[in-house]
Amino acid sequence: MDENEILNEAKAEMDDSIAKLKGSLSTLRAGAVSPNVLDRIKADYYGEPTPIKNLASISVQNGTSLLLKVFDPGALKPIVAAIGTSDLGVNPNVQGNVIRLNFPPLSGERRQELVKTAKSYCDDNKVTIRNVRKDYITKVKKSEEFSEDLEKRIDDGIQALHDAHIKEIDDLFKVKEKELLTL
Image 1 (cartoon, rainbow, N blue to C red):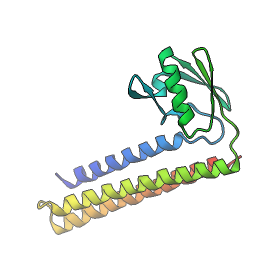
Image 2 (tube, one colour; image 1 turned 180 degrees about the vertical axis):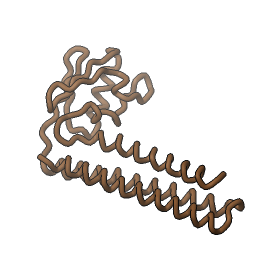
Image 3 (tube, rainbow, N blue to C red; image 1 turned 90 degrees about the horizontal axis):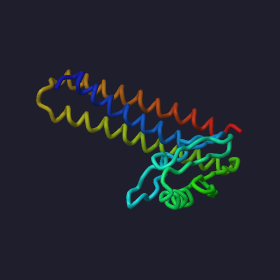
Image 4 (cartoon, rainbow, N blue to C red; image 1 turned 120 degrees about the vertical axis):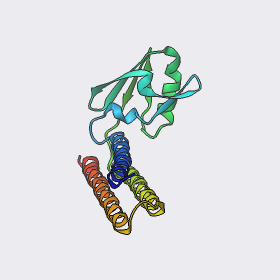
């Protein structure tokens, strides 16, 4: 394994972590409701935890409500139960095979809670990035195939990747925080 392979692998793992963070942050509602708020909620569909987007088509009715058209009537009750027990703070309104979710406007307190949640997602992601850095630096140190100079250069490269990804996480948090706190 050479220097470039190690740095590319470390970068790929860190990039994956950032992509997951972006997905998590997109589930936090700021202003208008997005179907993404349902991404992390899974309904118990015939014993399997199944993402709601696989069980219903989701459309935005207006800035504050979503309409779910359930594919299988057997999934209706599990979807309603999953949404009811989630942290979304909405009560599903069922009409036939359609579920309407009306989201109340965000209070200042709820916005602060969402900022804390976003911060927690970002902090967890920073830990992941640090662990990737630690794993690759350990792997290089244990390997006998690198000279001291090359080992130092690889360590510096991994550290630079780490620093860039931590900065990207901080930037993502600042953007999400501003989005959540803007009325």
